[in-house]
Length: 124
Image (cartoon, rainbow, N blue to C red; front, side, top):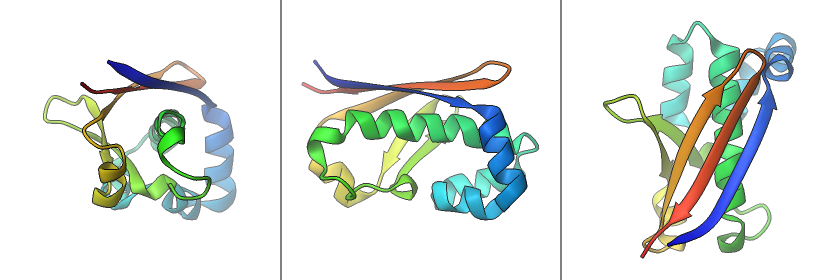
């Protein structure tokens, strides 16, 4: 069963401009610990961060009915990759408990100047 869907688009140039202006401090406000480690190794930092930002926004839209405004943070929603390179959503334990036995699936796409993401919450 599908419970909710979220989608988001991000202009990569806006993320690139924020990185140029604020440096890695900007990325550090958005990325969780594991994502930060991956980010530091990337050469395409603006593309990576744009995709992660779009994915986090899409995930947060799927979780709106489970959290009050201000209870969920960018850093607590991590978008990681499995051994095959497919993205998945990693929530902190306390956040994951709030959605019970549901799961959030994510897809991220990049075009020349746009990063897009779709998140779907599924369950029994």
